[in-house]
Image (cartoon, rainbow, N blue to C red):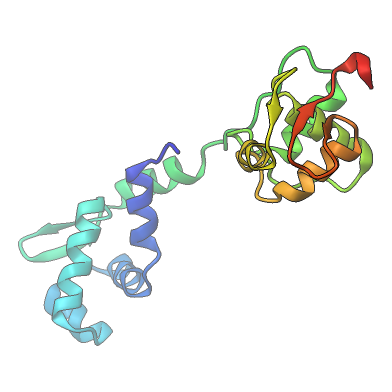
Amino acid sequence: MNTNPEMLDFLKAMSDADRLRIIGLLTQRRASRADIVSKLNLPLRDVVNHLAFLEFVGVLCQKEDVYELNDTRLTTLARDNFAQERPTYVPAPELDAPSKKVLKAYLNADGSIRQIPTQPAKLQVILNYLIQAFAPEAHYTEKEVNQILRRFHEDTAGLRRDLVDARMLDRISDGSRYWRVDEGTK
């Protein structure tokens, strides 16, 4: 998973109620540690730790023992971290438009399934997508099928059943062996 440390630090900074109270105070005026401790009724140790983290993230700066918000940096962090377009899954170009639309709607950017559709036509598009993870003429144990499906969604039993019901995967009745059904043998 690709992480953005700057974004994680920003989110951590903004997810603490006391840090938000400090930021709120500093939006009104500059303040020293002692001012923050007395105004917000917080322990000095906590205030020192919060100020250090907020300074590290770049939300505020210290000048002569007085803290003030770095409005420009705060605005930039917020804009850069939240205004970006979220990445989306890009379907294969050879797919028809309705299938592309379904895949974009139901898949995460990494190709995993965000939500399993309940409508049969949309589910069929997702199953067509999933079956590509199985090699033709290869045989799989139930555990191997589950491992492959788990890359896409945690409901491996449901997806495995849907693939079998759609005659895209076949199996021995005891479930000990699965294989992809060839297009010509359906």
